[in-house]
Figure 1 (cartoon, rainbow, N blue to C red):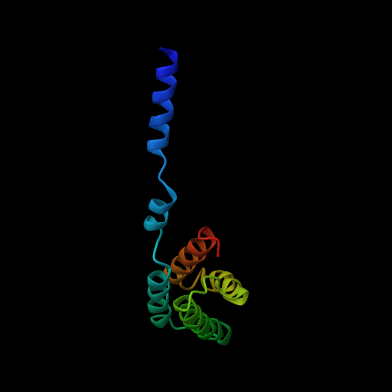
Figure 2: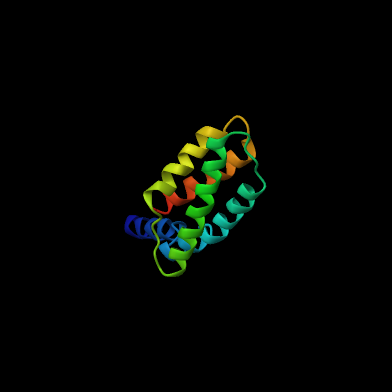
Length: 114
C-alpha cells in the first residue's frame, strides 16, 4: 500500500510541473515586447543630449535585434543590454513609465537566457 501511495505522489508531482514546451509557449513574444518598448521610446522626449542619444541608440538596437531575430539570431549584441541598463538608470526619475518598460524588456531578455 505504501508503494502505491508513493507512485501516486510521484505521478501527481509530475503533472504539476509544466513541460518545457508549455513554458516556452507562456513566455512573452520577444519581438512583440520589443515593439511595445519601441512605441514607448517613440513617445518619450528627453531634455538632455545623453537621454536623446540613449533613445536613438536603443531604437537602432531594437531594429538590429528584430532584423537578426527574423534571421534566426536569438542573441542581441552586448551593447544593447548595457544600453538598456544605462537607460534605466538615466530615466528612472524623469520617465518612470519608460523605466518600467525598459526594466521589463531587460528582465524578459535575461530570463530567456539572452
